[in-house]
Image 1 (cartoon, rainbow over the protein chains, first blue to last red):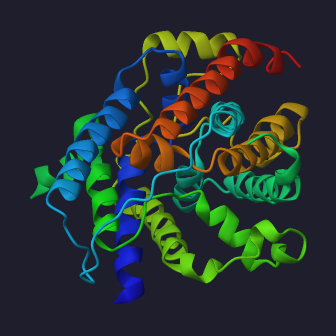
Image 2 (image 1 turned 180 degrees about the vertical axis):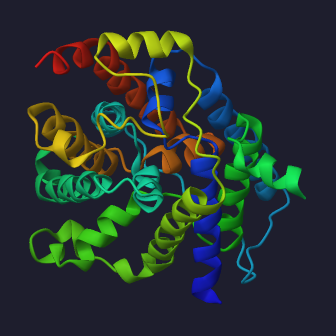
Length: 137
Length: 190
Protein backbone atom coordinates (compact mmCIF):
# COMPACT_ATOMS: atom_id res chain seq x y z
CA UNK A 1 0.00 0.00 0.00
CA UNK A 2 2.89 2.33 0.86
CA UNK A 3 4.30 1.96 -2.63
CA UNK A 4 0.98 1.49 -4.39
CA UNK A 5 -0.40 4.89 -3.46
CA UNK A 6 2.55 6.66 -5.11
CA UNK A 7 2.24 4.49 -8.21
CA UNK A 8 -1.46 5.37 -8.39
CA UNK A 9 -0.85 9.12 -8.07
CA UNK A 10 1.87 8.71 -10.71
CA UNK A 11 -0.60 6.98 -13.05
CA UNK A 12 -3.05 9.86 -12.63
CA UNK A 13 -0.22 12.31 -13.34
CA UNK A 14 0.74 10.41 -16.51
CA UNK A 15 -2.86 10.38 -17.74
CA UNK A 16 -3.31 14.09 -16.97
CA UNK A 17 -0.06 15.07 -18.72
CA UNK A 18 -1.13 13.16 -21.83
CA UNK A 19 -4.79 14.17 -21.89
CA UNK A 20 -3.94 17.82 -21.29
CA UNK A 21 -1.32 17.54 -24.08
CA UNK A 22 1.16 19.23 -21.72
CA UNK A 23 3.73 16.62 -22.78
CA UNK A 24 3.46 17.67 -26.40
CA UNK A 25 6.40 19.41 -28.06
CA UNK A 26 3.81 21.30 -30.12
CA UNK A 27 2.10 22.72 -27.03
CA UNK A 28 5.42 23.95 -25.63
CA UNK A 29 6.20 25.67 -28.94
CA UNK A 30 2.75 27.28 -28.92
CA UNK A 31 3.44 28.51 -25.38
CA UNK A 32 6.86 30.01 -26.16
CA UNK A 33 5.33 31.72 -29.21
CA UNK A 34 2.42 33.12 -27.13
CA UNK A 35 -0.03 31.72 -29.67
CA UNK A 36 -2.36 29.86 -27.34
CA UNK A 37 -3.73 30.20 -23.84
CA UNK A 38 -3.69 26.42 -23.27
CA UNK A 39 -0.43 25.96 -21.29
CA UNK A 40 -0.89 29.25 -19.44
CA UNK A 41 -4.39 28.13 -18.51
CA UNK A 42 -3.09 24.82 -17.12
CA UNK A 43 -0.23 26.33 -15.09
CA UNK A 44 -2.36 29.32 -14.02
CA UNK A 45 -5.25 27.17 -12.76
CA UNK A 46 -2.83 24.92 -10.89
CA UNK A 47 -1.01 27.79 -9.21
CA UNK A 48 -4.16 29.69 -8.20
CA UNK A 49 -5.75 26.57 -6.68
CA UNK A 50 -2.40 25.48 -5.23
CA UNK A 51 -1.74 28.86 -3.60
CA UNK A 52 -5.21 28.99 -2.00
CA UNK A 53 -4.84 25.41 -0.74
CA UNK A 54 -1.35 25.93 0.68
CA UNK A 55 -2.51 29.14 2.36
CA UNK A 56 -5.36 27.18 4.01
CA UNK A 57 -3.05 24.29 4.97
CA UNK A 58 -0.80 26.76 6.82
CA UNK A 59 -3.69 28.75 8.29
CA UNK A 60 -5.49 25.68 9.59
CA UNK A 61 -2.20 23.96 10.55
CA UNK A 62 -3.26 20.74 8.85
CA UNK A 63 -1.45 17.44 9.32
CA UNK A 64 -0.49 14.80 6.79
CA UNK A 65 -1.81 11.21 6.83
CA UNK A 66 0.79 10.15 9.42
CA UNK A 67 -0.37 12.95 11.72
CA UNK A 68 2.75 15.06 11.22
CA UNK A 69 2.11 18.82 10.84
CA UNK A 70 2.60 19.86 7.21
CA UNK A 71 5.66 22.07 6.75
CA UNK A 72 6.74 23.34 3.36
CA UNK A 73 10.45 24.01 3.46
CA UNK A 74 11.24 27.14 1.43
CA UNK A 75 14.07 27.10 -1.11
CA UNK A 76 17.25 28.88 0.01
CA UNK A 77 17.50 32.53 -1.03
CA UNK A 78 19.66 33.38 -4.03
CA UNK A 79 19.32 34.87 -7.49
CA UNK A 80 22.24 33.55 -9.57
CA UNK A 81 21.54 29.84 -9.35
CA UNK A 82 17.84 30.23 -10.09
CA UNK A 83 18.27 32.67 -12.96
CA UNK A 84 21.23 30.91 -14.64
CA UNK A 85 20.03 27.39 -13.89
CA UNK A 86 16.50 28.30 -14.91
CA UNK A 87 17.68 29.78 -18.21
CA UNK A 88 19.72 26.65 -19.02
CA UNK A 89 16.68 24.53 -18.18
CA UNK A 90 14.50 26.75 -20.41
CA UNK A 91 16.81 26.28 -23.39
CA UNK A 92 16.55 22.51 -22.98
CA UNK A 93 12.79 22.67 -22.38
CA UNK A 94 12.24 24.40 -25.72
CA UNK A 95 14.66 22.01 -27.52
CA UNK A 96 13.05 18.78 -26.34
CA UNK A 97 9.57 20.18 -25.75
CA UNK A 98 9.62 18.24 -22.50
CA UNK A 99 10.36 18.90 -18.87
CA UNK A 100 11.41 15.92 -16.71
CA UNK A 101 7.94 14.50 -15.94
CA UNK A 102 6.65 14.54 -19.51
CA UNK A 103 9.88 12.87 -20.73
CA UNK A 104 8.96 9.72 -18.82
CA UNK A 105 5.25 9.95 -19.63
CA UNK A 106 6.13 10.28 -23.34
CA UNK A 107 8.36 7.22 -23.13
CA UNK A 108 5.47 5.29 -21.57
CA UNK A 109 3.21 6.64 -24.32
CA UNK A 110 5.51 4.94 -26.84
CA UNK A 111 7.93 7.66 -27.92
CA UNK A 112 11.00 5.39 -27.79
CA UNK A 113 13.60 8.02 -28.66
CA UNK A 114 12.67 9.83 -25.43
CA UNK A 115 14.91 7.25 -23.70
CA UNK A 116 17.91 9.03 -25.25
CA UNK A 117 16.62 12.40 -23.98
CA UNK A 118 16.29 10.89 -20.49
CA UNK A 119 19.78 9.35 -20.50
CA UNK A 120 21.17 12.70 -21.68
CA UNK A 121 19.35 14.44 -18.83
CA UNK A 122 20.91 11.98 -16.36
CA UNK A 123 24.33 12.89 -17.76
CA UNK A 124 23.41 16.56 -17.40
CA UNK A 125 22.52 16.09 -13.75
CA UNK A 126 25.70 14.06 -13.19
CA UNK A 127 27.76 16.81 -14.84
CA UNK A 128 26.16 19.38 -12.52
CA UNK A 129 27.26 17.25 -9.56
CA UNK A 130 30.84 17.34 -10.82
CA UNK A 131 30.83 21.08 -11.61
CA UNK A 132 28.75 22.27 -8.66
CA UNK A 133 31.59 23.79 -6.65
CA UNK A 134 32.85 25.83 -9.63
CA UNK A 135 29.52 27.44 -10.47
CA UNK A 136 28.06 30.66 -9.03
CA UNK A 137 25.13 29.89 -6.72
CA UNK B 1 -21.67 5.46 -20.90
CA UNK B 2 -20.57 5.63 -24.49
CA UNK B 3 -20.54 9.43 -24.40
CA UNK B 4 -18.58 9.36 -21.12
CA UNK B 5 -15.89 7.25 -22.77
CA UNK B 6 -15.84 9.54 -25.80
CA UNK B 7 -15.49 12.54 -23.50
CA UNK B 8 -12.52 10.98 -21.67
CA UNK B 9 -10.85 10.13 -24.98
CA UNK B 10 -10.86 13.74 -26.13
CA UNK B 11 -8.08 16.06 -25.03
CA UNK B 12 -9.03 17.68 -21.74
CA UNK B 13 -9.62 21.43 -21.44
CA UNK B 14 -6.99 23.42 -19.57
CA UNK B 15 -9.09 24.07 -16.45
CA UNK B 16 -9.77 20.34 -15.90
CA UNK B 17 -6.06 19.61 -16.28
CA UNK B 18 -5.08 22.49 -14.01
CA UNK B 19 -7.44 21.28 -11.28
CA UNK B 20 -6.10 17.73 -11.63
CA UNK B 21 -2.46 18.83 -11.31
CA UNK B 22 -3.28 20.92 -8.22
CA UNK B 23 -5.00 17.83 -6.76
CA UNK B 24 -1.89 15.71 -7.46
CA UNK B 25 0.36 18.24 -5.74
CA UNK B 26 -1.94 18.41 -2.70
CA UNK B 27 -2.26 14.62 -2.51
CA UNK B 28 1.53 14.32 -2.32
CA UNK B 29 1.63 17.02 0.38
CA UNK B 30 -0.93 15.05 2.41
CA UNK B 31 1.23 11.95 1.91
CA UNK B 32 4.00 13.97 3.59
CA UNK B 33 5.95 14.45 0.33
CA UNK B 34 6.81 17.27 -2.01
CA UNK B 35 5.94 17.38 -5.72
CA UNK B 36 9.21 17.74 -7.62
CA UNK B 37 9.92 15.39 -10.50
CA UNK B 38 13.51 16.29 -11.36
CA UNK B 39 14.80 15.01 -7.99
CA UNK B 40 14.45 11.62 -9.66
CA UNK B 41 17.40 12.39 -11.95
CA UNK B 42 19.58 13.00 -8.92
CA UNK B 43 18.27 9.86 -7.18
CA UNK B 44 18.87 7.76 -10.31
CA UNK B 45 22.45 9.09 -10.60
CA UNK B 46 23.02 8.25 -6.93
CA UNK B 47 21.50 4.79 -7.37
CA UNK B 48 23.95 4.19 -10.24
CA UNK B 49 26.87 4.95 -7.92
CA UNK B 50 27.52 8.61 -8.80
CA UNK B 51 28.29 9.19 -5.11
CA UNK B 52 31.78 7.83 -5.78
CA UNK B 53 32.46 10.65 -8.24
CA UNK B 54 30.85 13.56 -6.37
CA UNK B 55 29.68 14.07 -2.81
CA UNK B 56 26.59 15.77 -4.30
CA UNK B 57 25.23 12.28 -4.99
CA UNK B 58 26.37 10.86 -1.67
CA UNK B 59 23.03 11.16 0.14
CA UNK B 60 20.16 8.99 1.23
CA UNK B 61 18.53 8.59 -2.19
CA UNK B 62 16.42 5.73 -0.85
CA UNK B 63 14.32 8.36 0.95
CA UNK B 64 13.31 9.37 -2.61
CA UNK B 65 12.06 5.90 -3.49
CA UNK B 66 8.46 7.09 -3.31
CA UNK B 67 9.28 9.57 -6.11
CA UNK B 68 10.76 6.80 -8.25
CA UNK B 69 7.51 4.84 -7.81
CA UNK B 70 5.64 7.99 -8.81
CA UNK B 71 7.86 8.03 -11.94
CA UNK B 72 6.99 4.39 -12.70
CA UNK B 73 3.31 5.27 -12.29
CA UNK B 74 3.63 8.23 -14.66
CA UNK B 75 5.02 5.93 -17.38
CA UNK B 76 2.14 3.48 -16.84
CA UNK B 77 -0.24 6.45 -17.10
CA UNK B 78 1.26 7.41 -20.47
CA UNK B 79 0.96 3.83 -21.68
CA UNK B 80 -2.65 3.50 -20.49
CA UNK B 81 -3.61 6.72 -22.25
CA UNK B 82 -1.97 5.69 -25.52
CA UNK B 83 -3.74 2.34 -25.50
CA UNK B 84 -7.13 2.97 -23.92
CA UNK B 85 -7.87 6.65 -23.40
CA UNK B 86 -6.94 8.34 -26.64
CA UNK B 87 -8.90 8.98 -29.81
CA UNK B 88 -5.60 9.22 -31.71
CA UNK B 89 -6.37 12.69 -33.04
CA UNK B 90 -3.40 14.99 -33.64
CA UNK B 91 -2.80 17.93 -31.29
CA UNK B 92 -5.00 20.89 -32.29
CA UNK B 93 -2.47 23.70 -32.14
CA UNK B 94 -2.99 27.28 -33.27
CA UNK B 95 -2.92 28.04 -37.01
CA UNK B 96 -0.24 30.67 -36.36
CA UNK B 97 1.99 28.04 -34.71
CA UNK B 98 1.52 25.66 -37.65
CA UNK B 99 2.60 28.47 -39.98
CA UNK B 100 5.66 29.29 -37.86
CA UNK B 101 6.68 25.64 -37.67
CA UNK B 102 6.31 25.32 -41.45
CA UNK B 103 9.08 27.89 -41.85
CA UNK B 104 11.29 25.48 -39.87
CA UNK B 105 10.34 22.69 -42.28
CA UNK B 106 7.84 20.94 -40.00
CA UNK B 107 4.50 19.66 -41.29
CA UNK B 108 1.00 19.80 -39.80
CA UNK B 109 0.77 17.73 -36.56
CA UNK B 110 -0.19 14.09 -37.11
CA UNK B 111 0.07 12.95 -33.49
CA UNK B 112 0.95 14.20 -30.03
CA UNK B 113 4.66 14.64 -30.87
CA UNK B 114 6.23 15.73 -34.18
CA UNK B 115 7.15 12.53 -36.02
CA UNK B 116 9.91 14.46 -37.86
CA UNK B 117 11.79 15.02 -34.58
CA UNK B 118 11.02 12.08 -32.33
CA UNK B 119 12.47 9.21 -34.31
CA UNK B 120 15.82 7.44 -34.27
CA UNK B 121 16.93 8.43 -37.76
CA UNK B 122 16.51 12.12 -36.87
CA UNK B 123 18.45 11.47 -33.67
CA UNK B 124 21.48 10.46 -35.75
CA UNK B 125 21.52 13.75 -37.66
CA UNK B 126 23.38 16.86 -36.50
CA UNK B 127 20.10 18.57 -35.54
CA UNK B 128 18.83 15.43 -33.84
CA UNK B 129 21.89 15.02 -31.63
CA UNK B 130 21.75 18.70 -30.77
CA UNK B 131 18.03 18.91 -30.00
CA UNK B 132 17.39 15.55 -28.33
CA UNK B 133 20.70 14.67 -26.66
CA UNK B 134 21.85 18.29 -26.18
CA UNK B 135 18.44 19.46 -25.05
CA UNK B 136 18.08 16.57 -22.61
CA UNK B 137 21.52 17.34 -21.18
CA UNK B 138 20.59 21.01 -20.63
CA UNK B 139 17.34 20.00 -18.91
CA UNK B 140 19.20 17.65 -16.56
CA UNK B 141 21.94 20.18 -15.83
CA UNK B 142 19.70 23.25 -15.56
CA UNK B 143 17.10 21.66 -13.35
CA UNK B 144 19.63 20.64 -10.72
CA UNK B 145 21.45 23.98 -10.93
CA UNK B 146 18.12 25.79 -10.40
CA UNK B 147 17.13 23.20 -7.78
CA UNK B 148 13.86 22.31 -9.46
CA UNK B 149 11.90 21.98 -12.67
CA UNK B 150 8.38 22.85 -13.78
CA UNK B 151 6.80 20.79 -11.01
CA UNK B 152 9.12 21.92 -8.22
CA UNK B 153 9.25 25.61 -9.14
CA UNK B 154 6.40 26.61 -11.50
CA UNK B 155 3.83 24.51 -9.64
CA UNK B 156 4.89 23.76 -6.05
CA UNK B 157 7.14 26.81 -5.62
CA UNK B 158 4.80 29.43 -7.09
CA UNK B 159 1.89 27.93 -5.11
CA UNK B 160 3.97 28.53 -1.99
CA UNK B 161 4.65 32.11 -3.21
CA UNK B 162 8.42 31.59 -3.12
CA UNK B 163 10.63 34.24 -4.71
CA UNK B 164 13.32 31.71 -5.80
CA UNK B 165 10.68 29.88 -7.82
CA UNK B 166 9.53 33.07 -9.52
CA UNK B 167 13.16 33.83 -10.48
CA UNK B 168 13.52 30.27 -11.81
CA UNK B 169 10.35 30.50 -13.88
CA UNK B 170 11.58 33.81 -15.35
CA UNK B 171 14.77 31.93 -16.23
CA UNK B 172 12.77 29.09 -17.82
CA UNK B 173 11.11 31.66 -20.08
CA UNK B 174 14.31 33.53 -20.94
CA UNK B 175 15.83 30.22 -22.06
CA UNK B 176 12.70 29.03 -23.85
CA UNK B 177 12.18 32.31 -25.71
CA UNK B 178 15.83 32.59 -26.76
CA UNK B 179 15.77 29.01 -28.06
CA UNK B 180 12.42 29.32 -29.86
CA UNK B 181 12.87 32.73 -31.45
CA UNK B 182 16.63 33.14 -31.91
CA UNK B 183 18.24 29.71 -32.00
CA UNK B 184 15.60 27.49 -33.65
CA UNK B 185 15.84 29.35 -37.00
CA UNK B 186 19.62 28.72 -36.93
CA UNK B 187 19.45 25.09 -35.80
CA UNK B 188 16.87 24.10 -38.41
CA UNK B 189 19.01 25.68 -41.14
CA UNK B 190 21.95 23.31 -40.50
